[in-house]
Image (tube, rainbow, N blue to C red; front, side):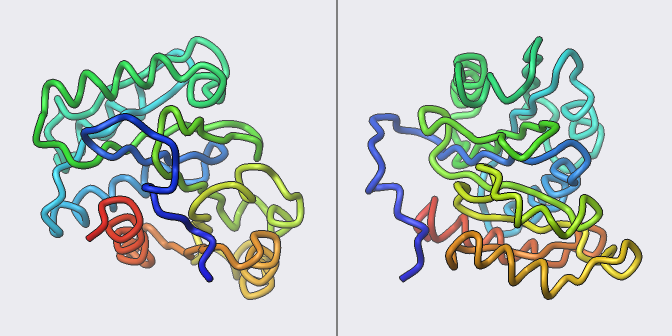
Length: 215
């Protein structure tokens, strides 16, 4: 049985747009992934908004606003002022407020993506903040990442192994990395992606539509 569980089995009293976290180390390709997810969700008729997290800048938010892929007003930036991990896990108040404000401004929003980076594999999301979350790693970070058993890799609802196209250029055995990731997660779902060619994006959208939006 797939270990991804339905949101109705999680304690929650919040109504409104579903909230999906996208975490992972700096440079793993989270913003590029969101740039691919935005049109993919639009093609499926999903109304979207985005919250980005950074230390003291709004660089990721500005990149999305300039992309032409989404109404710039639908992108909110949270400046954590400290390690971004803390405002998605220990005290997610800033992110909850940003998502709430987006919901008030755009009541048609069905899904809010909340992106946060970090320098290690310990970044996890509070379930007070998100309903479901994915963790993004990339092959250029090393094929030993799954063996390190970081909480992000083990606890996320979906593990994304990004930049799969780089494997032969950085000496990574992609089949072994995928196998070891699957073993570490005890069969819980993972997806290989190549954002340059939009490979694997459809699988992520399908998973969120099924597990989060119940379509």
